[in-house]
Length: 353
Image 1 (cartoon, rainbow, N blue to C red):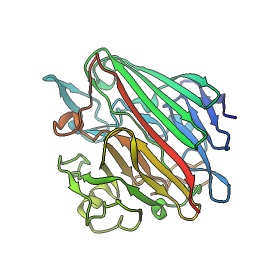
Image 2: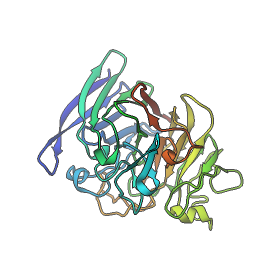
Image 3: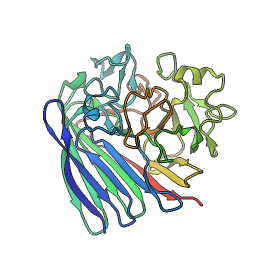
């Protein structure tokens, strides 16, 4: 039977209480989410021997979620995920300046983006699944963004071992929006181990090269005959240290792939040979950002007792392209008052023997 229970998690630096919500399906798979940052703090899935391990990085101490500089750990990031060049954009010839929080650029919603906000939680249960709805109102002017933006994130755990994430939003002024889930995956279940032994396949013929500031150049590069070719299963560590300009700029993989097709479709697979764990990603988004934990610094203790060291986790962030508000050739991220933003991503787990 599917279950959803709530319990106390901790308190923010300001003394505000935070709750943890535990979703569990009939197979024993379990996800834990807090209403601070809509953060996934734990995701337990079985390996080929039936052993359950946590496959997302997280902090051992609850206060680290509120006080660390690793503000994206497991969170929903927005109002705009990824980067906006020079922290500015225009809508209908009106320019907006948003917070600079990565050099001259804006990243992941700013200094106090959605990952640092307290969301209102609503438990939804029926006979087939259990869901957690999280609501947040981003007020006009927050981090420099225009419009009052009402956001909802719905987490659903199914008996097919799929974690479904549905995003929706409305606004009262033209604005931009690009939401993603920023969990760091390590399918080994051992958070002290690097993810370079994971195998990845992406349904993408092109990726977006970046400049020295990690901003896309507007070029779509063919993945063929490059280290960015994941059209078939390949170990992440196979090419990651090659002498390639783009790998040097990203200090590894920190790039957006242009996904093939439209609608809700498979974006790819992440597989760990030793445990047999396989994670398939489905999304309605046009792109997916692979980030291989190139800046994890080992300053915090993880739940499994290790440290969040260099490349001990990877992100597969389904999203629109970085700097889309400044690139007319990229899919638009503008949301108008008469429209509704809707996006869906699914992480489905299985075992390969």
